Amino acid sequence: MTTLGPRALNRALLERQLLLQRHQLTAAEAITRLIGMQAQAPAPPYVGLWTRLTGFRHEELAGLLTGREAVRLALLRATVHLVTAEDCLALRPLVQPVLDRQVRGVARFAKAIAGLAPDELDAAGREALGGEPLTTKELGAALAARWPERDPDGLANAARGRLPLVQVPPRGIWGVGGLTRYATAESWLGRPLGTGATLDDLVLRYLRGYGPASVKDVQMWSGLTRLREVVDRLRPGLRVLRDEDGRELFDLPDAPLPDPDSEAPVRFLPEFDNILLAHDDRSRILDERRRSAIFTRNGIIRATFLVDGFVAGLWRVDGKRDTATLVLEPFERLSRASRKALEQEGAGLLAFMAPEASDRTVRVEPLGS
Image (tube, rainbow, N blue to C red):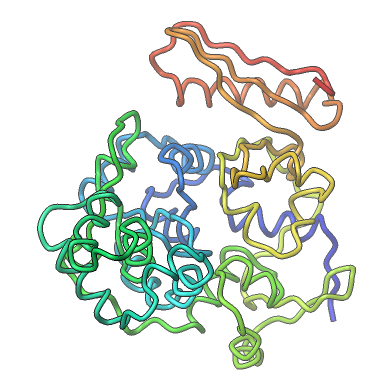
């Protein structure tokens, strides 16, 4: 059985995540290949597409959202993801157990719906959302009118977990603010949820985008449990490998495994990028000693940059009026070549993120600052 080290797994992941080179794909094609992009905040998917695609423009993703070809909704790991309309309809039923578990796991939500029949809550939620899209507060008020003794916010959040609610534009449009409003996926997209996709399909797509991977990796990425039986069912058609710690890894027979020594250009990853959230063992991309600097206590996954394929530091953009500064916080001392490459790539990132700024600079913070 072939054993793969961290660099081999790293290069495989980068290749499948469109990070070894920029690709000539549409935004919709990339989102499909990535099986969605985590999107708690509006901006990260735009940066994630810019860093992966040649010539990506803000208007392309904005057009997908306003044209109802892509949506933002709670999906994998019960977190908000940007997905194509097709994947919204196909994948949401598969991960519904994850959303149900979240509702049961939050005491306030569980208390608000204690004793209610799930079908009754679903019907009331759909009725409330039958007209214009609603904010969480408005949805809660509508549900509390039916059950006045129950917590409106708890009712709304439970309904949001139970129902496939998409965040409608202008939410998610670059540079546009406004309250988050929800509509059901079926009403917004004009189509019912799908019934044809299976967990087998989901696991195979994950391996195509993130493999080779263990069963625990698939479960971490999806939020689903008990996927061992799915992988065992697929095993005869999979490539079986191991990592250096002896963990069994699975992959598609035709999936690329680049040379571990192949060049990996510097790349900037946005907040919440799935590449940092898609494995139980993140050593193929992240030194575990750096985890606490990236994964904050309030649930933020900070923006990072890659050097030689691995997370090498954090970045942010500071701006005032017509100035924009890209601030890099490296974890280790950068070589002269890496620093130059980051400054060049960073200049492009600044031009994308702050096109209106007349003064753009890249600043590398001293170690330990």
